[in-house]
Image (cartoon, rainbow, N blue to C red):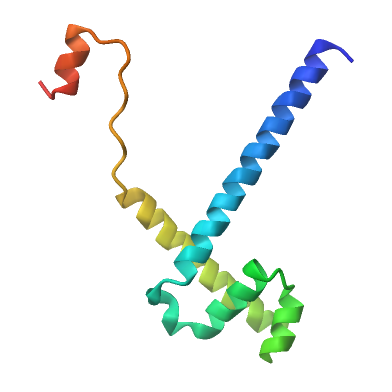
Length: 116
């Protein structure tokens, strides 16, 4: 195996790990948002979401347990995910970003950081 192959394998595994971490973060945030009181008005949608996302049930299994058709279950899940995505984006956009860390201090940068 040449150097470029091992480097690309290393890069690929790092990308996979980053994607996995990002997916886990988004999943946890989605589950936290799903339990927010705003979604209490949609108990069936919340139940479908929790069964599919937390309990790893298939749509078919969740539909059978809840007495729904698979298409109805898919519709509820898609709408709930859309609402959660909109809520997550809204939260991220309203979040205050931390101030940048400036390591190289110069007179110009100090003035910029002080808002002059």
